[in-house]
Image (cartoon, rainbow, N blue to C red; front, side, top):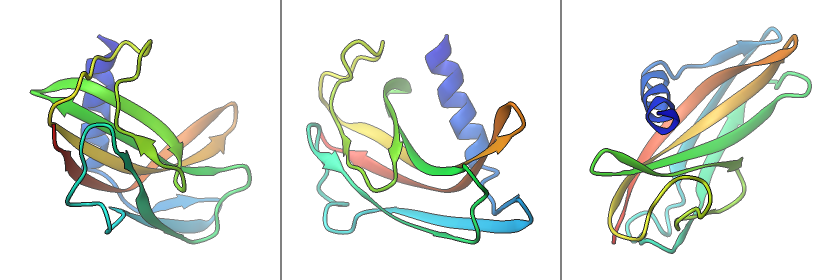
Length: 134
């Protein structure tokens, strides 16, 4: 149940990706798969992203990337990390997801996380899609 909700949530908010207004400053961003590997990604590779963020970030805020991959509509990969890190496209043993290889459709979302009292506000700045070969 949780996996399906996470995928639906990411898909629905992706439609509303827009500049974030936090702390009186507009923050915008872009994300693309690193050009040198975009056309040749395979299961087992590590994907990197080229990102830009403009505007003044709020105090204690974070910008990161979330990657979600599916096979035949089934969630097989979900990982969030700093935008300068690589994402290993492999099975995540123990995470409740099962990706034993094969082609997958993926999307990467650039997320801006801003403290909002005792919780956080999340802004989706941009999104890109990519394919992973089997």
